[in-house]
Image (tube, rainbow, N blue to C red; front, top):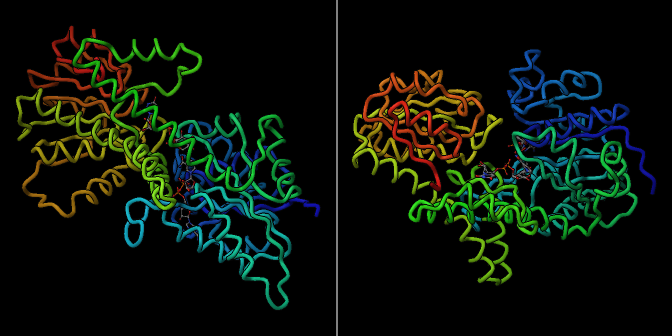
Length: 464
Ligand code: NAD
Ligand code: UDX
């Protein structure tokens, strides 16, 4: 069967759907792309004429949106209408960890993927390629196919072609990752449908980088890639603790091992533990799948990556308490950075959330500044984690509007996110504002240690 792709519908206008479709729209002006979502506020923000109000902050995104929106890229809540027009449908909905029922705390919650597959089954017309863009457990395509095939009755003779095409972009560098991907992975069992999708990417990606596999390899490769990346972070973080007690320096160790081509120098920055919406949930899912297939040892191996990550976050909170004479009661602590990494406004699973909670529980009054995370978001994150505890026993938190504001009368500053702004702090003026003795806890190794120390600030750096 030959496919002539004129219209794409992407279900889910989130961190993946929005940027990915913006790049496809830019590179394929002949294709009309409709990104749909059930969240009206999000769609309104995607359509906002003030481009600083887009729901996703990514360097380079607003420029692409400016060039494509209203031309061949459209954001809307009209899910059914846009499904019915589309030749290709991307499923790009959220797949978080299940919070209740079988597999709670480990398995992925597939209710959004199932709901969107059912909508596709009901409203699509003609032969349709259905692309799994969300990260899914291996074998999910089987369920999606069953749901889609259930619509083959009466007059409806649609044929569906399910393809796995996981997304490997990282937040903060989404646009450059999408423009220059290391690879595009397409898994499926219909050659023509795979060719049609590969045809879209080949408009800007070298065909040698477009890998074709079977469905299950593609689905499993995505979980495996995230597990390997997260494992690297836990490995370097575990060694950071050993550096601190032995006099070794984690940056020097990372440099030394990273120059071995077999290891490579990327993804070796020790930090406050990995955050983000993907690593933890995807490893938990891998663990769940391994247990499901009776591979207990494999499950335990990957589970350890998450345990080290939680341990690293707790370890930092403990060090802060210890250095501040064992008590944080009535002490002011400035928090620099709340997003899970620099260059994104996303706070999902950010180490900042847990570290802030630990400090508040110790009685600290914390003041948080992040250049891109909204105060509403910080408030939602902290309120949701504190609800079951008696808030009056704890310290407090507030939003600060600048580095200088959170430093005023602070006993300590904790650098949690590696925003560029925090690399160039004028420690001389900050030192004047802090209460002595004062500390900087640098969880990202970005503080100018010499300058901070020369202005009378005690400095603790991760892995040193
Ligand atoms: P997100 O929460 O930012 O966006 C998902 C969107 O889907 C939400 O806006 C939600 O309202 C919408 N949605 C859910 N059900 C819907 C339905 N039935 N109809 C219409 N809209 C619906 O999630 P995300 O970060 O974009 O992630 C999406 C998927 O991509 C996940 O599976 C994730 O694991 C994967 N992924 C994420 C990243 C990342 O960096 N965020 C990278 C690679 C892969
Ligand atoms: C990750 C994967 O990199 C991406 O391929 C996948 O599609 C989605 O999940 P993301 O979570 O957006 O992307 O960002 P990433 O750059 O991987 O960082 C994840 C976490 O690890 C962040 O909290 C980051 O600060 C931390 N990290 C990363 C480190 O602590 N050190 C490093 O060297 C790299």
